[in-house]
Every structure is written in structure tokens, then in C-alpha cells.
Length: 265
Image (cartoon, rainbow, N blue to C red; front, top):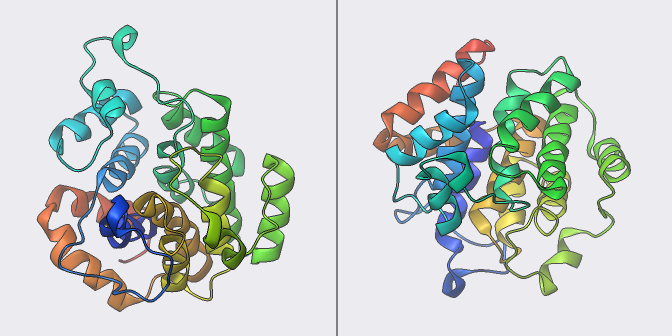
């Protein structure tokens, strides 16, 4: 979960069209970085699953708490819809995948339970088969990484189970990659960025260097990389201060989630 949020924070400043980059050589944290809607949605998923709350109501609660953190117009409309009939569906946008890491965190011993939890928090706003597939593939990859599978094994399972082309390297993807907010145009690439990485930081750098939807690519790759490599203590501290201390309710829920599984952050 924290891996997704840190990836979001680091990628936040490279999403605007005039700031997208095609290099891994950039400051990992800067004073302009911030947590975005990706972190807020991840926190909402954690809250709903940890406390057995309505995913839709919880997502809307957190969205209204942080309305200016970067939600797309379609998702803002979903958050403030007066009824489900008025709520637009975000179909297969990559937001389905960037927020699901808590589903794995709470179900590390049961893949079926993790996938069901991912479905539960996905279909409320992303009910297209590609949206659900993107969330499930991300969940499955994180779960395999927590189980100790290596990158090659994870790549084989995900490519077979979800029909994703994972044959390209990061260097193959980068030159022609463009901003893409769909699951099918972001999830396979983010998975590749994680699986090709040497460590957590390298995975996030891979994702941002594609020059796309950098905060979301960073969140997806970061969640998988956390399970693969762990997160260095200094990176955790740099994320907490100053970024997450500005949102004590988010930080408190992160700490509660990790405490639940007996892990310190």
C-alpha cells in the first residue's frame, strides 16, 4: 500500500504534458511533489476493506475530504452524484488498478480472497471487463510477489492469465509510449516496470521514465515493487515528512493497515 502511495507522490509532478520525461535521471523527491487522487483512492480502499465498510460510500467520503487532489472530471462527477443512476462509470480507466494494493495486503495467504476484494472495490466505479482485468492483474502480480515468486515467474503467470503482452522491456516501451489513462494501456507497462527493476526506487524510476500518466504508473509499479523488494527506510521517511504529515488521517490509516499485518512502516 505504501509502495503505491510513494509511487504516486514521486510521479505527481511529471504527469502534466509539459513535464513528462523519458529518462530515469531525475530527483526522486522534490518540494513540488504531492500525494494525488491515487493516494486518496488507495486510502479509501484500505478504509473500506479494513473496516468492512461500503466501498462506494467510503470512496466518496474520502474524495469529498480531498476534492482538490487531482480527480478527473468524470470521477468528480461520480463522487458527487446524488444517486447511483446519476453516477458515470469510469469503465476501463487505470484508476481501477492504482488503488487495489490493500486488497492484497489484507489477503496475502488467499489469492481468491484478494481477487474478490479487488472486484468489490473496483466495480463500484469501473465495471468494464478491462477495468476489472487491470485491477485483478495488478492484485495477482502483487500477491505473487508477496509469495516470493521471482519476476520471470510472475511475468509468465500474468501474461497467461490476463492475455497481457509482457514481452517488451522498459527500453522497448519508452520511445513510443504516450499518455494513456486506460488499464490496457497502462497496467502491462507498469507491471513490466516493476518486474524489470533492481529495487523499489528503480521500479518507480522505470515507470515515470515512460513519459505517461506518471503518478498512476508509479503507483501501480510501486505497489508491486514493494512486494518484490520492500521499501528502504529512508524512502519511507522522506515520504512521511513532509508529504504525508500534511494528511494525518491518511498516514494514520496507513499505519493501522501495516499494524494489522504486523509490519512497521
